[in-house]
Amino acid sequence: MRRHVPFVTSAFALVACSFFLWMFFAAATLEQTADVGGISGSLGRDAHAVAYEFAARWRHGMAGNSPLYMPGFFAVAIAIWFWCAGKSLPRMLAEGLPILGLAAVCAALLAPYAAPRILSDFVAQEHFNVSHASSSGTWIASAQGVYSLLTWSTVIIASRWSIRLRSPKPLLIPLGLNFVLAFVRPWTVADFTSQWLREALDGEPAAVISFLLVPLISGFVAWVELRPTRQKTGRRRKGSRIQSEQRKVGSL
Image (tube, rainbow, N blue to C red; front, side):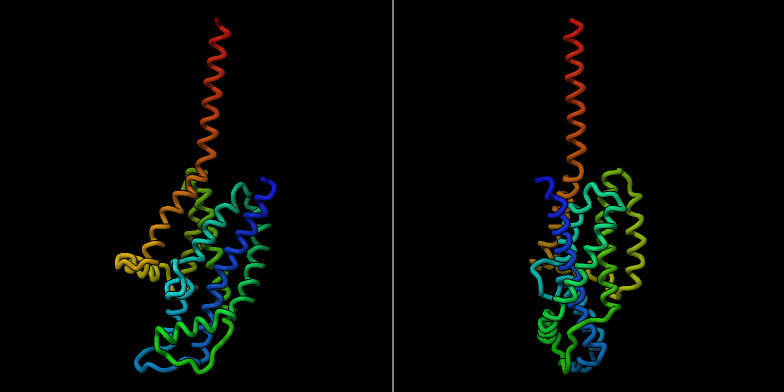
């Protein structure tokens, strides 16, 4: 059974990363439609800005398109936590880069199928007109999606190392990556976090459930990481106790 664990965790990571990038690539089709002037209507409102904001909310599951906020982030967090277990940095790079490349290809192939749905949701909620639609995003949007995935994956891996080493130093790496992300992505962490908190306080079911899942999943994965250490400590104490009893018996 243990022989199949690396394959299962890698397959899980591939599916999670593909889903994450699919949401980013699919939402970029709306952004590209706005860039080419395919959206009009609603005088007094900036069609380009509204489209970009809606695309950002859609890729984070906050546009009524998901029963869970941040679904791609949750999926990647769980998958990467188990995938990186026991792996050295060179091995993670050797396995992770092919997974990332294949996930990007899968997401790019599936993104056009979501474009009509995104446009339909946008028109229904924002009441704009779409004269012509794009079925793909730009390379800039794709690069932002890949970088966002890399940054989030680094947060998860660094968090596991931080727990293992009992030190916050590994978290300095994703901290630097997130500073860069704030400049390359227009919709920032503070934007969707404030919306998430506001809607959770208003009792929005998806926001509340997603908010409660954060400490539950965090506690579970931390327990998974700390459990082997506790088991080893318990075994060492038990072994020491047995040896002590044996010495006492021998002295008698």
